[in-house]
Structures are given as C-alpha cells and as structure tokens.
Image (cartoon, rainbow, N blue to C red):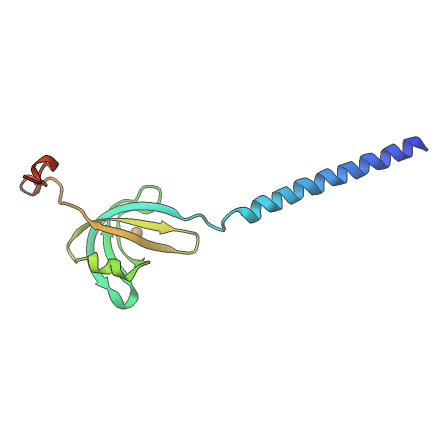
Length: 128
Ligand SMILES: [Cu+2]
C-alpha cells in the first residue's frame, strides 16, 4: 500500500513538471514579438520618387547579408522622407525589415566620395 502511494506521487510530480515546462515554453513563445524588425543600412543613388505609391526607386549597392546591388523601389514609412529624395542624389538609407514588411525609415544625402573639391570643411573651421 505505501508503495502504491509513493508511485502515485511520483507520477503526479512528473506530470506537474512536464506541464510546467510546457507552459514555460508557451510563455516564451507568446512573449516573443512575432518578428523583431531588423535594421539594414544601404547606399545608392536615387532614381525616381513616386509620391503616389509612397515609394522611392534607388539603385543601391550591395547590402551585406540581404541583397546584392540592384535598382528597386522601397516603400517609405513616413511620406515626409520623400521630400528628402532627389533623383541623381547619392544617399545613405536605413531599412526596417520584418518577415512581412520592408520599409525605408531613414534617408540622408551622402557627400560624394573621392572628390577632394567637395570635401566638407574641418569642424574647427566652421564657426570662424
Ligand atoms: Cu534590392
């Protein structure tokens, strides 16, 4: 009789443990955001601005671990960003990517490289 009781307790404990770890797994899964957005920075040249579609077409360079160089359109999250885009301008932009969406969230003009006449002034010389 005492032996049977002990077995029942062991079984009960086992059941408790496995349902506890199961609920921990479920909790961990439900606590995770569905898709944490990933930020990617790219560089390229603006080809076209399409305000009606809230899009900007950029000939972008390689974005490591994401895309090879290509010309494509990006949807901007904030239409105000389109005002900062001028065709022909060299830009640096930030993308926010999830499994479902890809938005351009930041864009700024990038000074041309390898052109010494357009080198920005030294910070110390600015306010003189
Ligand atoms: Cu691309």
